[in-house]
Length: 145
Length: 154
Image 1 (cartoon, each protein chain N blue to C red):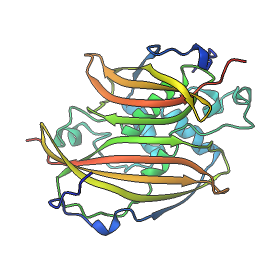
Image 2: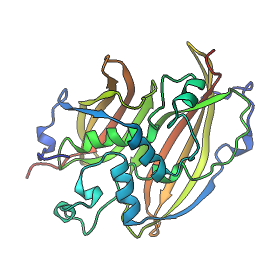
Image 3: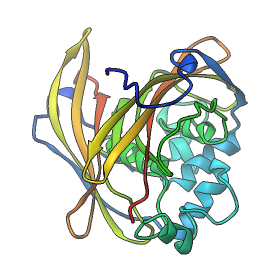
Image 4: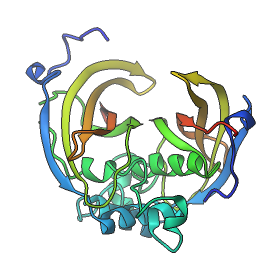
């Protein structure tokens, strides 16, 4: 959760966002699946054998959870951030119970129709440094004063 | 993207709006979604300090519309390719806040179906665009998601 207050003038290209460490457990995926109303029978999200039959390294974290976690990374940058757009590509499977590093970097800033906006690149990596998820976000930051 | 004549699917669905129904948003749904995704911000979880954010009540996290995309049934495009499918990517335009008491109307349309060839062979991507509109006819989110079909690796 964000604690600092950033303004548009504070953000510079190359600034880091995060990193944040996360581990998504099978129990968390089960809870998300309940909210998400996914099928209750064993699936690639919940069952190692089903995942193996589908050629996966293990039960996977739903993509919607990865999108949510990346949005949390961006919103956690500052209490003043408003997320306008997030665009995510799933490159590799995110499996349960592994250490994930979520991080971002500012790639551009400018006024769009008079609104101060900042562009960011986002990634989720595993502990081996493999990039599992990539993304971009557009956020609004308030002007100082 | 150029249309691939070798991809067999129901072309009549391309660009045609299809209602996914309406969804009543409750505080409990927002909190459950927030907690299930590991959210800790009280503006979304409702724990303690929600009013400090300046809101009367909690607001939904920006990706909350995903809670409805899984239960919503899209039309079957009758794609004749591949024996497994995955979520390939998603873009969400967050256009307005979603709050308890809102009623969201979801409308989806098939945007594109196209093929790419990678290390694992040919893949077919199916792209949908879903618009969520609230009871005041404000578009609150525009969600573009892409699903890939391919053959299982042997």
